[in-house]
Length: 44
Image 1 (cartoon, rainbow, N blue to C red):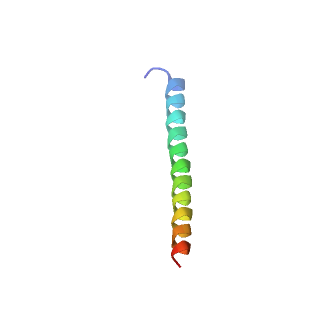
Image 2 (cartoon, one colour):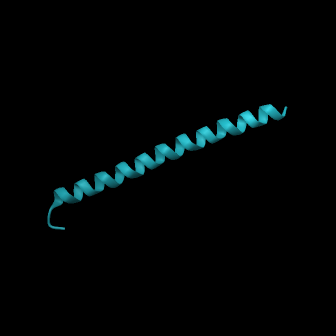
Image 3 (cartoon, rainbow, N blue to C red):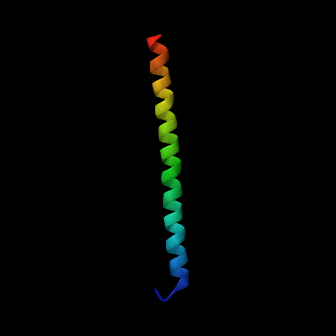
């Protein structure tokens, strides 16, 4: 680990991956909630 620039890039990539996963998870859960709400309305 002699080059600090390489470490910065590695950290930025990790942050980008975690951020993308967080956004994807949020979108996925919101879509699932919408589907669940539609099913509940159909039952009534």
